[in-house]
Image 1 (cartoon, helix red, strand yellow):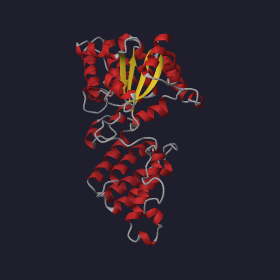
Image 2 (spheres, rainbow, N blue to C red; image 1 turned 120 degrees about the horizontal axis):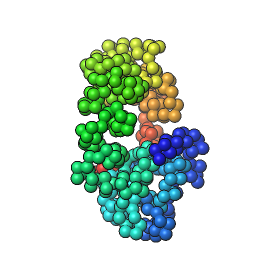
Image 3 (cartoon, rainbow, N blue to C red; image 1 turned 30 degrees about the vertical axis):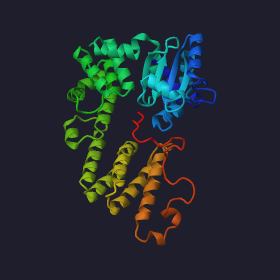
Image 4 (cartoon, rainbow, N blue to C red; image 1 turned 180 degrees about the vertical axis):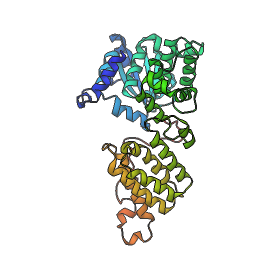
Length: 393
């Protein structure tokens, strides 16, 4: 089944795999009782997507995952699917009935008993979301079975691997960490393919025994797991690590760039802007650096520095040149946020510049005369989050 999922994910990269208006998940239009009646007649579970109008992850799932044709093929075959606004109509009572507290929430219900047989939630990749649906169909991977067995202390390998995947899908990091610890304490080796895959995808950070084991036994891991995968894990987990830790690690592909960024970040934090500027320009001019990898990290350094209210105007001006470099050189031409950040920074600089009102038109210095007043990539169909509401995940 996992080979099938991989094949389907590859297919999704092709334009033909995207929704064409008739593909993707077909959501039932009717009441909850009507959906349950249809599901009972067809011998299916009911899949309910609980969402709110202000939940960003809900909108992402609705626009990026649910419309995929291969996702629709699977969910339409196995479930009667419904979308439920948890804050409107019968959705309020249903959300209370099924204990929905965060969004999006996915509930799989038995139409005969109205009981939830499986549940999950949060923003998920297409692969995770398919696995969520598969897990709902198998009693041994449903949430109740997993939670009950884990609480009872089960430590058999297949169970723990299923539990880790489930806990990861609902962003339960503590559950993932505890289950992974049971797995390795039970004799599972980090270099075994299935264990490494779980570590690679679900355990992050450098302050854990698995990262230390990998770093201290780099040659063995590179041989048994593969140097490319080990280097990728080391690179990902040390992107924001301090220089001292990076210096202590073996040489891996990407270490040089991470060290460079650690030094730049340290100089920016210390507000040694001249030294930071010199290090940044050296990196931008270095023809040996992986330009895209540098941009992927550097844009967050610039963003975090240039939007602080107490950032000096002279540093903002330098940040504008860095943002220009990023906007001109980034390979992802579909990422509009880079260009929005660049334009927003330029607008801010113009407003702060002495005498700007004598040079620039009011249309740049002031808010637009008509229409939307905030320059943002926030979708227009995403409502503001009500005060006191838990954020979507």
